[in-house]
Amino acid sequence: MSLGNLCRKDVVTVKPGTLVKEVTKLMEEKNIGSVIITDDKEMFGIITDRDIALGIVNKDLNPQQTTVDELMTHNFVLVLREDIGLYEALEQVKRSAVRRFPVVDINGNLKGIITLDDIITLLSKEMADVASIIENEGPLL
Amino acid sequence: MSLGNLCRKDVVTVKPGTLVKEVTKLMEEKNIGSVIITDDKEMFGIITDRDIALGIVNKDLNPQQTTVDELMTHNFVLVLREDIGLYEALEQVKRSAVRRFPVVDINGNLKGIITLDDIITLLSKEMADVASIIENEGPLL
Amino acid sequence: MSLGNLCRKDVVTVKPGTLVKEVTKLMEEKNIGSVIITDDKEMFGIITDRDIALGIVNKDLNPQQTTVDELMTHNFVLVLREDIGLYEALEQVKRSAVRRFPVVDINGNLKGIITLDDIITLLSKEMADVASIIENEGPLL
Amino acid sequence: MSLGNLCRKDVVTVKPGTLVKEVTKLMEEKNIGSVIITDDKEMFGIITDRDIALGIVNKDLNPQQTTVDELMTHNFVLVLREDIGLYEALEQVKRSAVRRFPVVDINGNLKGIITLDDIITLLSKEMADVASIIENEGPLL
Image (cartoon, rainbow over all chains, first blue to last red; front, side, top):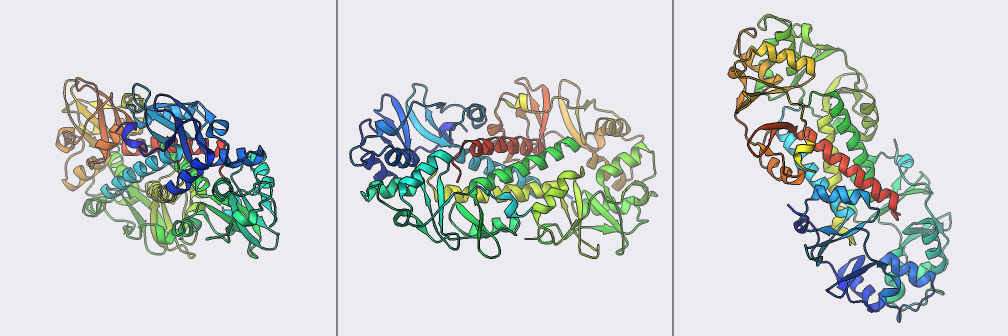
């Protein structure tokens, strides 16, 4: 099972220059905490609800006029290829220090996103599955 | 080991009426994503960076004049007693649908906070410990 | 949830002096790997399928005449009280180096047994539960 | 990281026709619970300490004269290729109902062995690693 099958494919994107108020509307409607900024050729960055809260308020910006370009994190520390396995992804993820990773195809096109929380969920389900095989099969005692 | 020992005791609190801009400053300085609103007698609610992003922008509020009272989540779905164990806490946590829980003493005074992420971390460390006992002790093969 | 509720209560016991061949018959019928030796007043030890294989063959004993007393592990490194929680049990279990633990009431009477594998299974189910709360509740992205 | 790197490479093998008493000696010396029966061209089966305990005693065999051929499990429900990843192995392992799996190269030569307990240990270490990234990186609260 490759990362392309395991990641979230319903990733939400906006174009550079999009107003922050469009993004917070999307975040509320779709119950998401981050959006990727891309023009479909290139990925420019990512913006989270936290980036917006701290950016708008601490820098005293007008949320109705500010664009994502001013508050997003530019580039990505780590981009994961869709054709690697979960375990290979783990090796890479452990060396970075961020929480969200775009998943791309061989040409660098965005295919999905995966978070550390997603990975924990995948691992814990695997673990519960393996544990229940051990349990069902005995002898445990 | 009771929840009082396992929770984060460095929880950040502000009084009702605090301006949102004071809270986002605290969130940036202390690298936290939520703050509890209390007057030291009573807990009134909790506010997250996400509450601020969506509240300020989507409701078109002035971040320099808005107070936490307008954006916080009032009351708590679940408050955990500091003298219960992790497993007992899990039983309660699984029935709720939120991510952060205040930990209180017998009189209801705030003693700390615990999140689902903290619990996952605690469980995974326990699991790695138990797995390494099994590994060291053999026979595994 | 106390250990008394989490442990296996269908623990199989035999009296001191029982022939090994009675025990292996029980192990096969009930699909278990260990049996506790007790006279209902006192617990004397535990015997596993491995103890029997290595004991009978390496010591060249007659399996039809040997009793459990000759091959069992005498006493228990750690006995767990039924009224403690899982997390408290973990603290104790991590300091020992064995794989199976009798669970007893306040008077020392055997109530059940718990293994490291059981504990891994319990922890992994908890973890999958917590992970699925995080997943369902969002925002993860 | 392929299964070839994750499995135990110190797997112990004996030839068909080996006496059970040779095997129990190996099991005691090397602190292992199972041995693979192979003539280096072909794998014929696996024998565990439990197979020996129940086989010798319940069938009333003479342990000094019995060979592994009489008590081993013939063939393997599932053999895993060394060049697959852990996650791919998990997909296969979950569909079988046994606890130990030989790991082989492209020609079917034995390269190692992996157990469900090993897999649980690998997964729980991964999980603790990912959880500690989440913990260190904040904001958790």
